[in-house]
Amino acid sequence: MSAAQDPSRNVDVAIVGAGISGIGAACHLQMNSPDRSYAILEGRDDIGGTWDLFRYPGIRSDSDMHTLGYRFKPWVADKAIADGPSIMKYLRETVDEYGVAPHIRLRQLVQRAEWSTPDAQWVLTVDADGEQVEYRCNYLFMCSGYYSYREAHDAQIPGLDTFEGQVVHPQWWPEDLDYADKKVVVIGSGATAVTLVPAMADQTEHITMLQRSPTYMVSRPAIDPIANGLRKVLPDSMAYELTRRKNTGLQQFMYKRMRDKPEQAKEKLLGLLADQLPADQIDAHFTPTYNPWDQRLCLVPDRDLFDAINEGKASVVTDTIDTVDASGIALSSGDHLDADIIVTATGLKCVMLGEVDIVVDGDPVDFSNTISYKGFAYSDVPNLASSFGYINASWTLRADLICEYVCRLLNHMRDTGTVQCTPRLRPSDADMEVRPWIEDFTSGYIQRVLPEMPKQGDREPWINPQNYKRDRKMFRTAPIVDGVMRFRRPDEQIAAPEHAAAELV
Image (cartoon, rainbow, N blue to C red; front, top):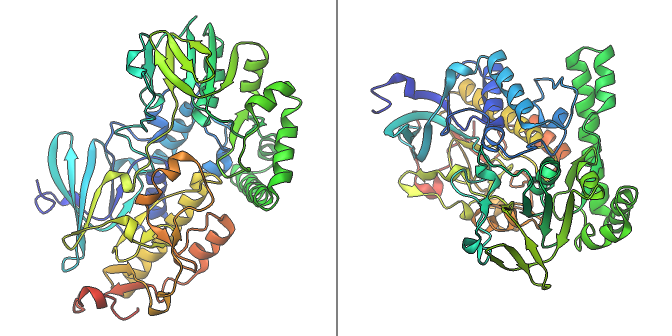
């Protein structure tokens, strides 16, 4: 059925994804651009995105909820490092409190989005629970996250198909998996592996984290005593705002300090482990070869991983896989890890814009040939935003900023009677140095997808700084009319593509 036949499928703004980004986008629209109609299109059976998809033991946030939570919705639970069910509860509360529920359309998988300049609208091809339907919108807000929901990263582990036990990927955790008194090997050393190992350790016969190389790990309490203390004497909103500022400032300060003085940072991080693990464990399994924040640090709440290791319930092995055989994993060193269950926590498959095919006036968009505008929009792609958070801080800090800017942009278009906004390079940008969209970050999940990502330039607004302080200025106070974002009224003549920018409004 076409959108013309069903008015409910014709909206001002289509939000793709009902996870933490999409729900936040809807709330911002209702607060800041209430005149715009919108729908949230979610391909799965429920809201929540990451926090509904992942069901493995111990699933939790890897940053504090005072910064991973929304700016407008206080986190009031005792634990700042929260488990998946608590985060889902928070998201459901947000949906109810801000009246978002009537706008959510579940089992609506967006497959293709085609922009028409003459019509100033996107036509979305959507798989609606097995039926193909169309939605139409003027503005498309992609809040679909950064990884594929269809498939995980295939690490090409040799011999895995010969294993006679059970192989599990965290992205598709079986509800009935019985690991009691079993020998379990978790392949990986990122946030998922660091969460799984202590969560499973009490029930397994033994659990081993097999890593190719060490990761920097930092232990901190799951409870923030300052946040909880402030809530006892201040209103929730004020206590939350103060805690959020404290934690955001601390995140940014520590990140900058570690990047500016990596050797000192490395020494400090390893020194913090001295009271938590034996020296031989630190040397063999917890001393990375790279500098801090070349890859994301792993959080160990309440020392849970270290306690499991010290109690003999879990162990870490640093080695490479020669092959998987019927009974476990043969290592390059000649050792063998016996296993009943192998968990392949080997990473996610990153994708651009939820694997939706984007077409502008009949031409498919190759995002690797675009330049990122403020890290949320793309050169020569009209009326489209994407929510992409931080790799060096909490995701939602940046998602909130992007939503604020999108609302400013939509309000400007309403006030000026314009229907199209398109970032376009200026003549003065001809000499601009083009750089990777994310710099100085060596994690495999980002490096694998960088060739498919847009580029960034060497000057505003063609940058993706991954810097909260700089982003706040760029999104909140920088002018909407900046000589780059070009606007078009419905009655304006449509120019040829090479001169497509209309007069600035």
